Amino acid sequence: MQTLTETPALVEHGFARWDLAKIFGITESDPAFQNLRAEFVDLPPDPYATEAGRNRRYARGIFLPWSREFSWIPDSHFGDEGWMNGYWQADHNPEYVGVLRKLPAMSEAARNNPIIREIVDFDFEQTRWSRSDLAFPLHVGVHLIKLAVDDDGHEAISSPNELHQDGEPFVFAHLVYRSNVDGGVNVIAPPQYRGKQPADVPAGEVLAEFELTKPLESYGVTDEKVSHYVSPIKRGAGTEPGERAVILTDFTPMRQHI
Image (tube, rainbow, N blue to C red; front, side, top):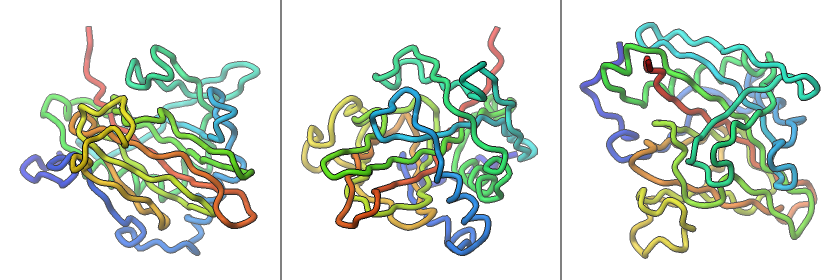
């Protein structure tokens, strides 16, 4: 069972940052990392934001806290739409209130990539749960998301484009790569600024502001303790497209409900 006596920085402060390349001993030349990066090459457009420069795939899994076993939940087939997975945030995302978003499923190669499994294990270790939650499986969402901009004067936008809380108790972001990008600034603020822009947060109340710049540079949030935001990206000074690719994970308890 998970140790309950230690309080990770994520739980104590509401957010934390890590360098997983250093923690895992992974370099950009490692085959597993190269394979992971290749998953973002042909990432399909987000079907709910085809003009936002957002591309994504999504998979769902089950994590057993008592044994550390993790397994993927089978994808669903939606006829001409192909293999998809439903993503539900109730009213936590103001752009999709009450919408079950059907998102393209992750590839089998991505599911089998050992780095993704290492990420899930690491992220779980940063979380803390009540004894009753630990008696049930945890639902794990894994998103591959790429913001991409081909032309000057355009932006690629994350959702929602404001300080927000996601609804899942713990959420993590892991950079895979960032290329020819301006923007993509992360902001952490107290929860009362949910729905605001970072500029609306009074001076001195922003808890953190930073950019993820190195492969597998990461951060996580305890959803009830903070709100968070990532700014849109623009193409940088180079001639190639601007791209920012991340893996997001989230953990939610699967309690019995009658």
